[in-house]
Length: 192
Image (tube, rainbow, N blue to C red):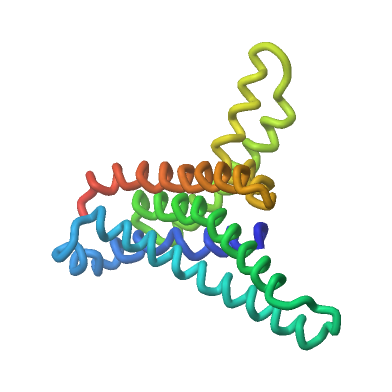
């Protein structure tokens, strides 16, 4: 779930705003609400679009396992699976922010999806490169660089400690919101 749900998000999110801007249908919505409200509504909609399948998949996986495995434990296992699904959802909020941030800048849905996937791959490369380049002296800066990547906080989201989970959640949500609002600053200056 931590591996494949962000890919799903990066394939579905970046086209949401750019598609409506390129078709001209955004004008009908923007007469009634501000651009900020409209974009935040898109963010909330994408977040809900991801959380529902994650929760349903956790419950479905538990149900299948309960019928197929005699030793399957009861409600505590389904609760753990739901908590895990919430952690994956929080992790995906960063990718929703990246996708919608790019979507606000691009006029083409395909272009937005391509750029969002490039940014996703670039963040993974930056994280891996920083692990390889870190060292003593001035190279210690490479220990800080991975903090801007969502993947750096994935392990802390897995942990059972509330302190690690809360800290990682704050970082991941902040990364997504920074990308979202960077795109939004440019979107406010665009002619729709």
